[in-house]
Length: 133
Image (cartoon, rainbow, N blue to C red; front, side):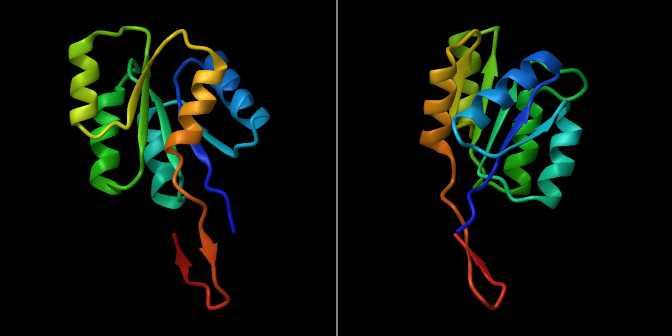
């Protein structure tokens, strides 16, 4: 069985490193992207179990990325995080397909528990090379 990685999308490099380190310490494999375009490029090549994305990013914000991910593969859970929280935006994110919405700053335990909650199950590879979830 292979554990699926978590894709972290954050344009603040220091925060991106902290998020990846937090999840690695908790036993999760991570991939990272510093933009929505880079995240989509990864998603076209790699299966992931969860996308954790900032909302406020240049060029492609988290809502636009969410829409693209849901077009590309609606089964991938997307957890959005933002420092600019309001109820209307959180509701809009959930209606657009986000699995949850984290308000920054948040405790590392909150991130880890949300990843544990929403991460897709591991994949099994049979001897014929067929992949099933």
